Amino acid sequence: MGRVPGTRLHIHEGAGLVVLRADRQGVFTVTGQGHLRLPAAVRQWCGLAAGDRVLLAACPAEGLLVVHPPAAVERHGPVRPRD
Image 1 (cartoon, helix red, strand yellow):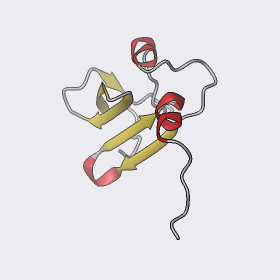
Image 2 (tube, rainbow, N blue to C red):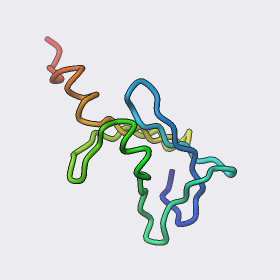
Image 3 (spheres, one colour):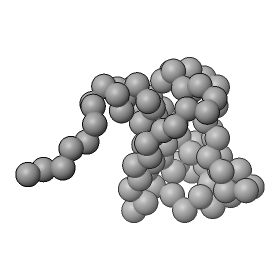
Image 4 (cartoon, rainbow, N blue to C red):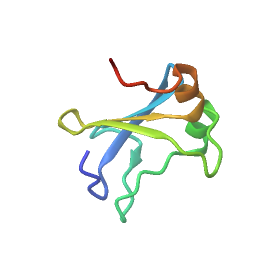
């Protein structure tokens, strides 16, 4: 996503995950400091509380970032190496 200040974003919830995509018509924006702030409504969708750690997965070429809240990570269990 590049985190360029002013980049417009579309944010939605899907399967308990928060999906952010660069979108010229998006309602949300990257802050002047390059931060991505999740609005309160979005945090409530996924049960995120202040201080919660999240797992981030990104596809910069697609302008996509997926936030995995604790409940989503716990649902899938620990990642184990393959034999």
